[in-house]
Image (tube, rainbow, N blue to C red; front, side):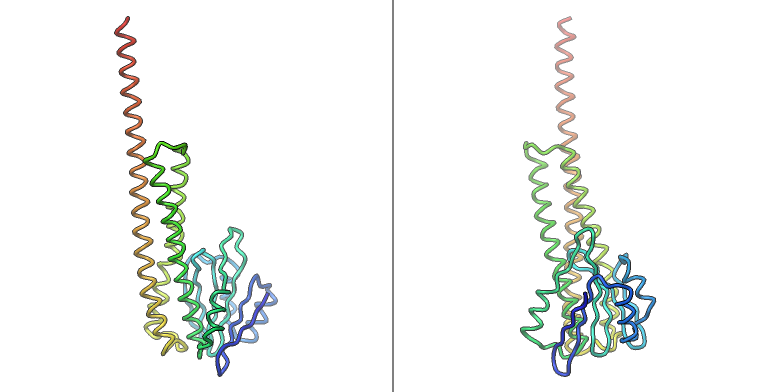
Length: 252
């Protein structure tokens, strides 16, 4: 499915393609002169954010807060986004961004459109990390409570949080290299206001990385605390068994 949006005067075009067929990608490549070798990455999930520069466009891969992949092609007066419905449920909803753009309609260049989109993706990292923080607080409370949670359940949740934070970090940290290259003015269509937005986005990205690293440390502390609680419980059990053993053998 392909949706086309136009902003500003002169017109800047955003073409959003969802679950594209090979024929649709070929048609876009022919019309906009896109590098065909990038379609291999557009057809499979990328390992990390990246950027490839070509003579008349640039190819950028980034991830949303839900870890949905967005493949972007940026040209002189157009932006193409390619995304797929992820079988793991990782999706990016562009509607809030569209609503913002339509209200302000101040994207005078394709670079400003791209910078606004990237800023929206980075904002999503904070929403995701806040959700993981809430989950961690629940697990931390369960570690020191006497509720019905089993040790296996707690371990499952802790290592699940650790895995989610690792995946989020892999999607976030390499984006620093992409933004650093943009801020060095290596992309000719990103300048002026677009560059200012990218600088702000870079500052947000650094804060997001710090927040994720802090949460990973907290999860590690929670794992250590959980192991300490288990160890203490085992020691109490062993003391009780030793005491009962002394009583039994003492009566003999």
